[in-house]
Length: 213
Image (tube, rainbow, N blue to C red; front, side, top):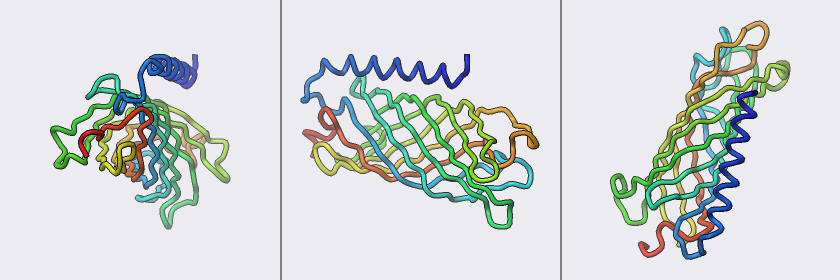
């Protein structure tokens, strides 16, 4: 079975399981469920492109959308989607591509260890996923997908009982095999990706900072 199909079915099962489980919690349960949206930049590794191609060291935009569920006060899971646009560096062959990913991650609340204010929260997240590459323009047929592993840190600042702003830095390790430069490589990317985003996190079932602010 295709790896993408297997991962999507597994993620679908997890989402259904969490939805059924969370229905038993009241609105007073703090920080059980959060939705997140972030906007920022990305930086691809230079060795992820075929010879003679090179991406810009800083690219815009990067968009992240996530849904987080805390299983315990300090431990949870997050399902998130990331979209990244990457284009060529000056004086290199012209290309643009869309780098999309879906990851299922474990989340650890490290606020007591790493935060310096009662309004601040620090979360470490990591987990597997799949990356989907879609070149644009002349290389549009060179689509590819491969597994990835992602790790990152989020720093949150509480604005209200249900809203925080955050900065996230993440690194995505591409686990794809080298592609054939002639048949499928031009305009594609199978390397690692660093992202930095600024966003908001909205609590759907309470708030992490309730009682602290």
